[in-house]
Amino acid sequence: MTGIKRIYIDTSPYIYYLEKNPQYVDKVKSFFMSHYDSGTEFVTSTITIAEYAIVPYRENNRKLLDDFDMLLEDTETDILDITRPIAKKAAEIRALHHKFKAMDALQLASAVLSGCDVFLTNDRQLRQFRELNVITMDDL
Image 1 (tube, rainbow, N blue to C red):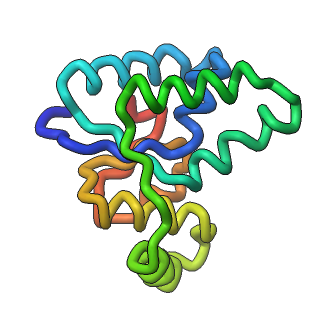
Image 2 (image 1 turned 90 degrees about the vertical axis):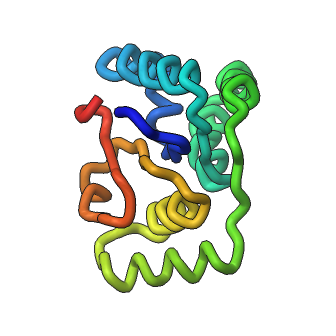
């Protein structure tokens, strides 16, 4: 993948990387490193933070929370707040894609409105979205 300037990272790649998922950790690590080294900007939203932190809070795993914060900081990830324009774009996305969940639509809207070229997820259903290049772990 060349010519990519901004990549939106959904929640699942962070989970796979930080929790060392045996099926995906190497793919995600390679993806992060190659794009970070090439100067690609990483983007996510506060929704990712809320989704990622559920299990570490439930399990009282401060290390995973700290590792997540450090990864976002080390990769200089641009963390977007959900704004009114993002909410409206998410509503438009859900109007066209009835089966998309609200959180997924907000993530996609954030990616589109922040000028991302790629949306990295592991939700195959989101490949139906055509306004940007949606890739999954199996595509890596």
